[in-house]
Length: 416
Image (cartoon, rainbow, N blue to C red; front, side, top):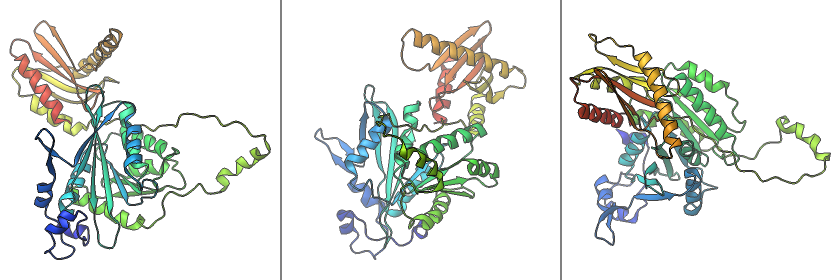
């Protein structure tokens, strides 16, 4: 079914694949099995390694590292017009689309791991695949899976978007304040001097008129073409079909043009008679994408899996910034006020973080446990959402505490 989505494909660019598919009809897909057979190689220590996976050790800003890497490895960085970047704040569809295109087009998924230089912790994974269509230039698709919190890491997708011909923003289930933060960060990014992406596509769920109104209210640059579609996003192929329809409309449009001499800049003419002033060198501004926001539906499902644990009285996902409960699960026979517990635990977490910083312990606070009489309380910060934690209220006499902690760690992995 996916073959019809991409049109007729030409022969694979890899000469080994051309040799392997020489007897096939022109325009067919290269076999995935052939790709898998040549994707690994043996290193000097005799280990099998994937030649489509690379590591980039970051010693400063991750976004600056990506820009330097592109400048060093892509000779066409300033002229390429066949690049789409997928921005998926909820992490639902982008990787699936990349994988589906790779499988259907016979091109590998290349991954670049950004690692922190001291701990080698993965900060983000940049995924790329290519789509080869007959009579057209190769189309490159990028996606950044940011896995570490922090403002510097939130800039990584901007480094990909700014040199794309189309940035597709897949808007999944997000809270209103998260939508506002996302739009504000995108508006800031499009104002940066390095921004060269002429098309911005918002893919909304059906009947999301309120989001479309928010997008229309943003003051985007005049040179930027903003597209909004609302279609059911039920599969990777459906997402790509919708994206491909817009791409076919904009692919022949010119790249980012120079600023036009319009009345928008007429007020600067009055400054021409003034004596020249020395140019001050200032650091380039940066745009920070809004932090990932936990989907309440996913949180409720994860908490529901926790509730059958022996001795569990109640559990909740709490916003550490405000103390508001985002999702909760309670036993009917054990009424507890999770709103009060959530607000109190948020204050406890803030105090622990401040104390940890003051003592120079380093690293984020991951887990806090307290015991009061017949009850125990375990708080665990969600690694993907550092401003959200889960609190579990337990019966001290009936609960296996190590098992409860293990279940919380499983819940953390389930929300990645």
